[in-house]
Image (cartoon, rainbow, N blue to C red; front, side, top):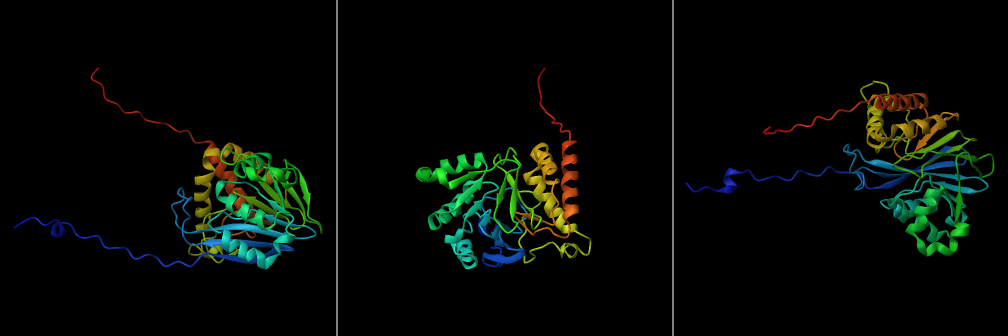
Length: 297
């Protein structure tokens, strides 16, 4: 009988794709004058190749409308269009005063450019390394640079009025040399950007349901997701992360508002304690490499 490849090797069958919700922007009031705009995707974004969990993510942006209107950390280009559509429903873009960038990257530049095109009056508040990155990305803005930026350093403050005075912490790391965290003393919200987050998409804006996510074990699944996020992002740079945490521990935070995942209100102490413990454990690691070879001599 003649050999038939098709009879010897079973044909691969296509795996049905898992249905997902479309990308959207979830909006909620989290404190006085303060909203979160959570750009959501239930699929892993292309640039997140280091995260294998495939639980989706949120890109959290924060809007403070006081005497001045401040927008903290607009999302990357994966969400630019739907984000701007939703933002326009919350505030006329011509009334935006400040865009606060806790870090910049190429992915965020598309949204930043779209905002600047629509609202050229805005001032970009960021660190000096972030200014250099933006200037390099948009040389055509050279004639606007003198009024477009406010450079902030560790300990600087920005008064948005009605008690909303933002304090900035420099949290430089090898991965984000321009890194900042922002603290609003009125609402006691720490806008922590890359710290204390996780890549998980869901309807829960706050962490009150974390105890229900792992069969009743308090904070079980959430803790694992945060640990996975920590290991991917921060484990290689724990010395700098530990220095950043020491700064952030100086302020009393009622809410931790990260760049990704749920906001933390009910487990603030635990989240901070976990990060310190993970940094300490990682710093104690001693790595050994075995080199195996064969030789005739």
